Image (cartoon, rainbow, N blue to C red; front, side, top):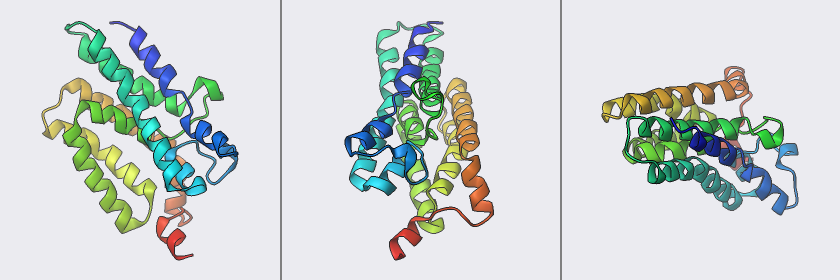
Length: 200
């Protein structure tokens, strides 16, 4: 297996676009809001437009390295595995970036890019679930947790490869681990909600 592409995936995934966007706006996003470098915190602190910019950039961190690997690698038994691992490493890079002493985001947007490459239809289903769960619960974290947990199921039902399903399960597990503080706050009724933000 060609290990170069997973390494590139990690290094590109580790680029902290949320921090870059925050610095361009004159703040260190790590000191604001939830102190997370992801799109959700950027959106809360700096507004929806910059949050969307961060979302797109973080999404591309997962999509582009996989597309590059798929384009450059010749057809072989290891090609699909290398491409999938490149996406997984991009997510790991976002969560544990070497540039920030391995303190990164929660990987949801980067995972979106990975699964957009693997199965756009599964993403369409997941986005429906995400929007519905956030609208009902008021918590972005609930949408993130639910969609990441269900992604392996959608891929299985859509006939995706075993490699894609295993990668989806690994990504989902990592997302749940990175959301452990959100899970604790949800259990104790302290999680921030978009609904409250709108009514305050």
